[in-house]
Length: 207
Image (cartoon, rainbow, N blue to C red; front, side, top):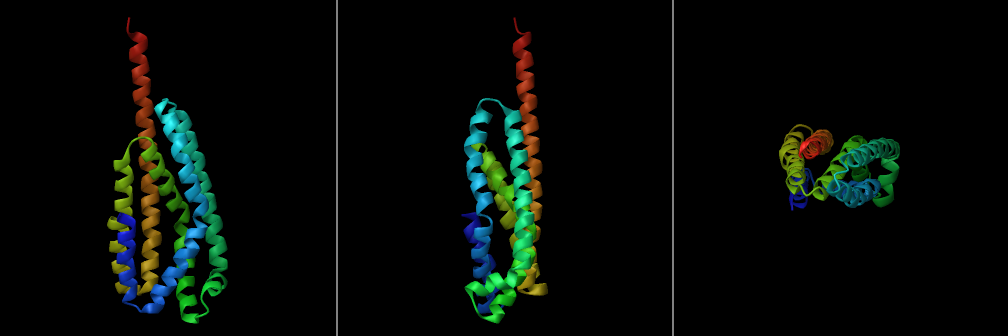
């Protein structure tokens, strides 16, 4: 529920700046959903793999899968940032001919895709945490991303720079949450590896 409620709040911020801003946001969001589909598919497939290997105490394989997944997300994010950045106006024009809508949607497609790579890190990490049987970190990351970063920054950005400020807030929130999710997942894997190592030592030393 956190994400749709937060998007509703963000839309209300944009509504202050007129129907054109809301239309541009909706347009850019649809383009974004297509740009993120590869990372969403990766996050979905990461769950079964991580769950199986986590349960089998194959933490090294989990770390390797996350590392490869993170690399893909960052590479895909860079690719999408370049493609959408260069073709922002042309892509927006496909969906809406209004020049005002195109101008605002292009701002979104210039700013927010910069953070798609780290948004992918967050999606993959959340999927991995759920597969590990740790839903609380996943919920916490999402709450910090949307409620702790995006909404407050969007409120300030709306007051200072209008829709552009809101879009910049989205990029900053994605970057902060993505890096935070990455650090949390690495620490979790290291802690589990230490526990497994300690348990193995205890078993080997027992008569």
